[in-house]
Image (cartoon, rainbow, N blue to C red):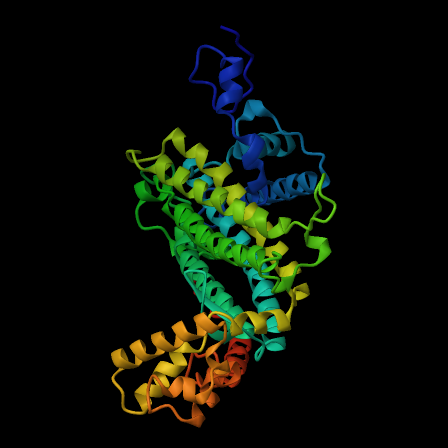
Length: 469
């Protein structure tokens, strides 16, 4: 077996040096160094608390904080040397601290373990990243509102089963996207409440015999409160799983948006034009303009959902408390964050430049007998039972299919052969404009209602609730 001379801070227990492959296999510094800022932030708060309770002197505290700030500066400048021998971000920083300030650096780890340290770092990291995600989410929602306001009265077909169902406005359709993202925002904020709980002080699993003040540390780090059980604090990653579940829902929504943009930009629909900057060509077919950004976002939704499943499987069979399995939580979590932010950014950049082809949308809405339901409602208002009205309209649609004309294009005598209740006022509701205008209740597609929904939505973006506390 190949061995190496270990320089680990935690190697005194072992008579042999760690196998070279095992050392590399078990190390996590290659990816968890991304949490260096949070690790230093947590260590500064921990040292401040240890001084407050008398475990550290003021001089030792100041030396530790000064050393940690110097390390932070080295990391920012790219001069910090990461060592796989120190396994992870925590031991790398602590080792460098000892190099810089000597014995005081060895006292920093008093009253804590890497178990509660990493759990704290991940929560601080997620709390910060959620802010970045929210910023991109709000950018996208604003872009959707701006586009919806341009098209609050642009008529297009609404679909069920991907078949023309009823006429709606493009603005109304866009506002459906907005509502999905609003729920996603609420889920992020709700998830943040459970992320924003501090595990530091749980130590390895049972707490510590030192007279620590966990409330002080929690306050210093901006957590809502310390965690209530030391075993649970270091062992569960349900908060990370919950975040990834929320991210999966956001990506699912972006994937649905993508599917519609891909369809609408095709020659078969030709409803929208996606800017050239967000498309690519074909290596063999010169006429092609491929909607690569929506397609890639649609594909990446599976990637994030896969990370959710991976984290669930990671946690499902672990006994209390901490296990090395949990080292596998970071890479899927980090990739979820990166993927989500990038996809939201791509959409927030792209949506403001989408061009709606109004005439194509309008003509498509005229096909497929989109106002059939309006005719049925018209007959019901005249006193007919809905099921009888449904049958009459079905007969009228059959006639339209046979003569290749929309309901609004059928003559009054042709319509009256199915019911004497139909009079000349029927054409007020058989037009696309009349159909959408009639749906002016809350949540309806009437242009005036869509505009009100947009104004309300803008107000909600100005003062979003913060549920972290």
